[in-house]
Length: 291
Length: 235
Image (cartoon, rainbow over all chains, first blue to last red; front, side):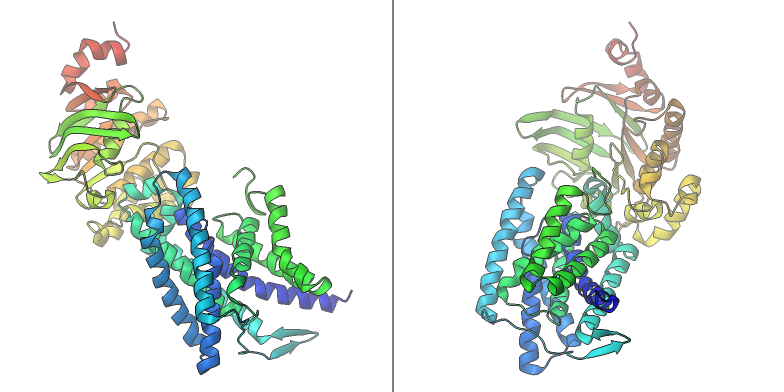
């Protein structure tokens, strides 16, 4: 096998991994603060992807318009869903986990139906950046690079928000110790609403970037949810640095299996890895065992 | 200043508090003692708004607190140092203090208060960029107290601050309680170290099985035959 080919597949995989990382970061913010496994996550990704495809078809709206718009809409939608549904979950943790799973599972079906109604079942993509740059023996697809760079910028902004703002500190405090946050007078309900809204908005942003690379329809959301979970399982739940590593692994797995096997096998690759990690390293690749 | 009237609290079918009443005057150090499971922590968490109160009244300067959120109660100057500290282990010491000071009542003095805490507790200043989870037990307790002080409390509820600490560190925590009180902050203290806590308290309540069974001046409680027998190991 050629070194050049391996290099090319590695580049492709890592660039896609950036988008997976962004989607998974959104999921991680929500899980960290709310301990909710959001099974509707992929639907927000796909909803934004389809919205950007339609806006591109109609008005050739570019990423700089579509991404902020999708971000704001999803933020509002996330806040609404948290206040209308998730806030009403029982306080007792064990039953809240089971109920939240059923609730987000239901929301996932609702949004698949909603997107089918709005966008039809057609597969769409955004032929926006179709060129490629050549770098020695490698070719770098513009769409992949743009999606990677944009994901990186958003991830850095998220990291800055979490680290250097009062809201970010409240989000981290609430995810590390709810009782402690309450004792400090943190408005935990508000933090939960904003975290769910933020996680949903990040999902939407990743959707706008995902569709630069992949073709999607309303029923592909579940794949995205599972791929995001696979990334988090690899990196360790609640571990932001691990998320980046997990995303790189998933991106590479998809890229290599897509070339050496078939597209169908490539689609299954994240889940096979997901199951292997759950069996062998349940705390994630970087996780402490038993954590 | 703080007045608790006939407080009833239950966890499901288990009734934890049966009509607890207590009063705290401005400037006092009031100690609540009692066996494990007697309802001391339940009382503290109920006053701080963290537990739902089934019935009864909690008044701070005449204002009802029993239906207020923990945030609203902190904003009124009543702050809890919870049992077990409940720090944010992966955040730095400085970040823990900043979260403690984010309440609206103290936010404008955030940097001033931060500097004051680092001066009062030098170890917290020296290790400001270290994760809170890396501190020793005694240091963690100091951080928990400093974090609560960041919101400029008028009345501080301290739940078992000396738990798990060596006698030396316990003595330091008790000295700190007196310093805090000398700053003009009213203190309600739950303690297992009955003798030491009665020495610095103005008044004390003894709680057993969710009821106040004894109350009075600290010296009076210290001399009470039942207290001697149950907590002080004297005949």
